[in-house]
Length: 83
Image (cartoon, rainbow, N blue to C red; front, side, top):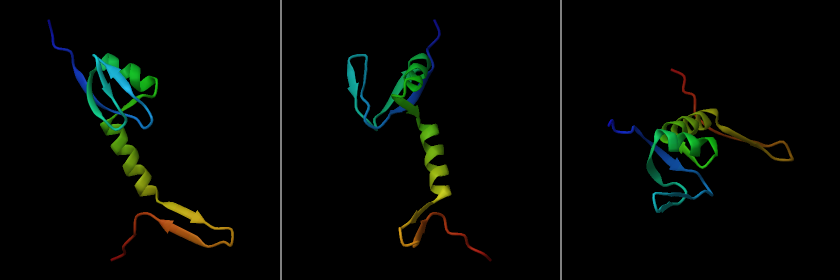
């Protein structure tokens, strides 16, 4: 009998997962079988570490701009340097 492949996933914000008698709260890293991980990803309870890291990198790379009612803009994001 072959070992089942496991996947490390993170419980998403405002979610709780109960698996094999254990309760896992948001931001908890857990190992699940591929089938269990796929089902919980589909239902929006967990995400893979890799997908969360990719999302964080793309979000920080895009930066954030806030514009007030008087037209003042504040930009937060990566700083370009020219050599």
